[in-house]
Image (cartoon, rainbow, N blue to C red):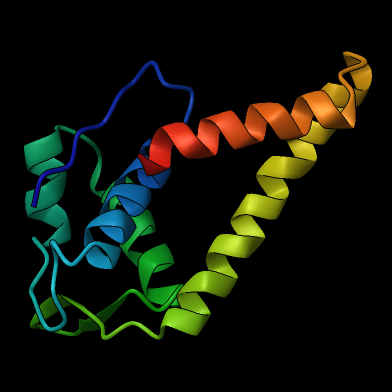
Length: 126
């Protein structure tokens, strides 16, 4: 499992870990039943606090991506695509609200905002 964190990105470390693990699960890189590194091992590999990895794993479990078994570790959970999509839609809505707030303050029109979104989407898609 490859996780790369950045101390200068402005995104909390636990969120960086969560997002990368979620992405790996959703793309099939991490499969159902696969064991994740222990919180201690991951913290040591990333040279971060175990509290940070604990927070990431707790959030991943809360969101239904992993299951933790006392004494055995944490494992990738079979994901329900409807729940995953709903979680993603919620996250996207929050990000779009921030973008719309900035657009309104910067007097960016709805058409300009839609064009930006379309270009960004097409760039990522293809």
